[in-house]
Image (cartoon, rainbow, N blue to C red; front, side, top):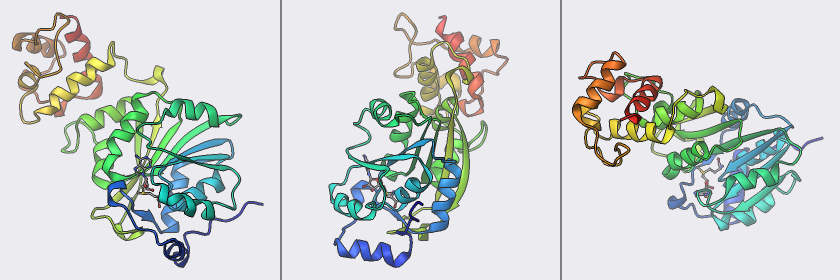
Length: 298
Ligand code: SAM
């Protein structure tokens, strides 16, 4: 019989924080979850089972961690703030399927960690209420490192979730949308108001699940790094036309190191049946892939 998570009873969270005289550290993006309904929504979106290893980034005082312990086979939780360790020792003491790992998620070798902790479990799912100051770098590290994970379910700022799920031609569409949608299928599972956290953040939040695409189901492209250089250049100067944004963009060049010329970019667009006046925000991921392949030949 498994223990029920108990930390979300509001008086318990306060009790724990007071007992340890815990001081929130702004620099670590500490906004702890209070609301059990939100925790239910997160674990439902993550679709955890006893066959899964759940990796949590930033367990805080262990509120979401308890839910992960309840629903997953095993949990590995990575926390940077040492002051939380004595608290986690108490709040997670009922569970024998969790390990708290001290470290900065940006510096850890996550692939080795997964290999080491996975054992006989079949699924690997990342689940977290992310520290908002490094949301995008954490997600890009997970995606670009091609980690062997099935999905990533995270609480992020509402506006960032919107950008991840945005489609071409909409105001939120940009380099983040394309990067996320190359590696995964994003789906917003819930919107969460500031009063579900302590302390309250200044902005609304969303839970989003990224279902990771196997490599053979991604948009085919000859050189993904080159495509992302084209994408970054296109959105680096958003108000320019694509031709002007790519012409002489820093970090983007032909094989011989020279910059792409206006006529070359216009010819590549014409081959894709796109007007030379088009802006990057109108192109789909597929069109960026074709454009990148064409430019690569020059
Ligand atoms: N999971 C807890 C919850 O939902 O109540 C806490 C979430 S809080 C938004 C973010 C957590 O990430 C904090 O515990 C913070 O100390 C931790 N954190 C911040 N930066 C980190 C980093 N670079 N590596 C690992 N953990 C980090």
